[in-house]
Image 1: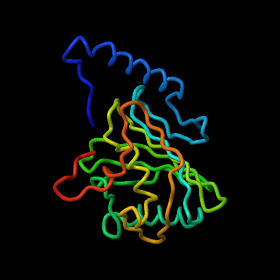
Image 2 (image 1 turned 135 degrees about the vertical axis):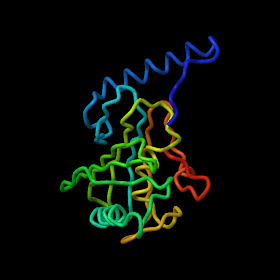
Image 3 (image 1 turned 120 degrees about the vertical axis):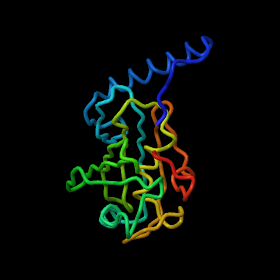
Length: 197
């Protein structure tokens, strides 16, 4: 994860300072505990005042029962039946409710842990509302928070390897904090290209 250092040139200082002030205001507005956003996405919260985050709303062709079973199978299957294609992070359960689950994802070097919240809404298929938040000071995340979420619901059509159920999905909303990425191509990393993120 990239720590922001002092800008090398005074020309950049106003823009960087403005980005920090804006990010801090957003973080303060959301508070440091889990809250629901205006889009109905619940976030797990972070102890870091300024941190990277991503929110998604996803429509899946599978039922919420199948979606949850697949997520549970991926988490339980680590590392033999399933592994995180995004740099081999490790997912763990924090809590499981009727329509909502919370998880953590730790980087493979054990240095960073993000928290995730997922809410499931039955309807035509299943709507998944997800949020991933870094737990330390961070601005740029190289799409890590986005990939934290995507790796739990992606299917074979996306290059992922399902364990229990394979279904298609459509991301109807992806929102990131300033500096956070949302590039699907960064989510599946092979061999020598893997990083500790």
